[in-house]
Length: 140
Image 1 (spheres, helix red, strand yellow):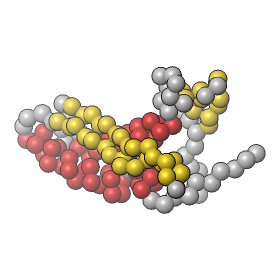
Image 2: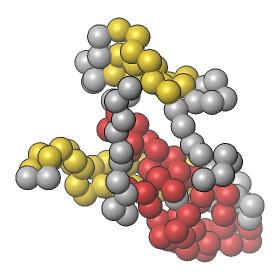
Image 3: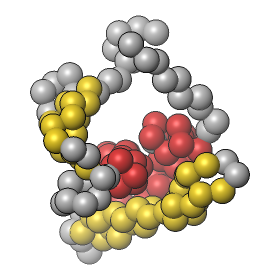
């Protein structure tokens, strides 16, 4: 794997059930178990799915017109079954509006195909979740 394809974060325990994720650029994101305001790991996964598609769709449509509204929500049902804990019914909802006029109309017309391209091939996060990708754990 080439170095420019590797993605990584580090995680540091800062208090009981509270952690700080840090990326290689120095960005930090607190997380927790849901007993405080920090995002839980599942909420971060949903945010990552929505955020990844947001970036894709924004790049594909905003070059035609700057949106008047651009919001996404992501949800899923946490279940426990014979496969263990996981999410079911993960959904991402887009609310995107463009200004009236030729450019806005063109951007609006591109929106469905941009969402489909993100879902089907561009969004690394949702594609990874959708595909059977093994996660290997190491203990030092």
